[in-house]
Image (cartoon, rainbow, N blue to C red; front, side, top):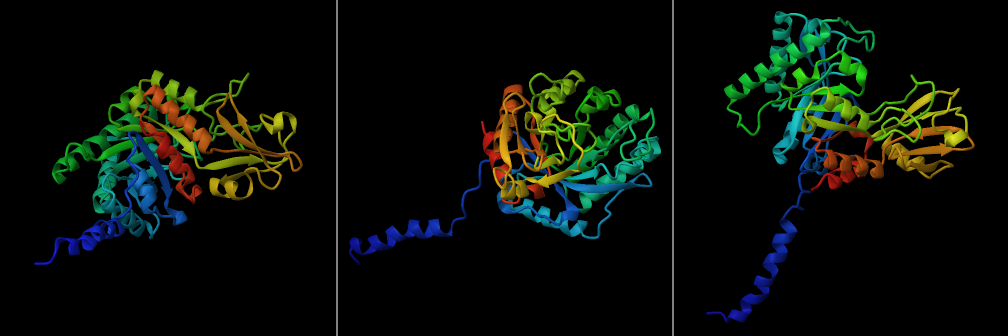
Length: 379
């Protein structure tokens, strides 16, 4: 028999070897929903680090044609397969197919118009969910009862929107029972909703919410090339002495419309909006402009704009939002950063909201914003 002391070096090495082979621990899943939109045509995919932090991925977009939901890009099936393979490694992740968006909402009104068209829509949508091993649907109709980008729209959209969601819910639940999905993992149904009273006037959100798991509230694009003045485009609160739109006001309006707070997911923007030829008063904030307006992914702003190349970062304490000003070139840029995301996460905690979502994943190339959101949403 060998002396016991001869085994000690081997015993001491075993824990070290085990540590070397074990994968690094995943970040704790957030207590709230944390969803990201992934725009398929960009060709950007999630990595394992992002998948560990997210609860939901909304793959954008499917189109509506002849009352049916269809995938338009030949690459969509392969991109969805890559996401479901990622989910196999991160089983908490849920992958939803987002339908419509600004460009592809033209025929929602037709699809929602009759019982027959709603059935066609629901059957085709659920068929895509099952064919591609997804976890549900996100309906991004921009917007019921409004023209959007020259869309078909009708006064009946208000009621038909709810009926479309009801039909989708019935089909998704029936499919979940057929597939034997556990009660804690049903097929989910969500919407992307505009922020503001106009959207609420054209929808019955109290009725619609009964069929939804949650509402992705698009609390961004408050200002852009369609507004006469510059301004914050994704601010949590209004700036001082203004009645500018804000995320908090949009949340409060949605709650008044009948949506439970815990079904509201607050929107964040992983991109900025900028204007040229801006009057210099107030460092360009809420000023007229005579130049073009542009958008910028956050990673581009971080690399070349934020406190770089003549741009100075400012913080609006009332709005809880950052902005950039270049006093020589007269460029103003509104954007989101780690500080404003922490403020949004704190608001979610304080008001019992359902979480945070963002548009769009490619803007955060190094994962800085997602990491900040994930950490801030922890209990």
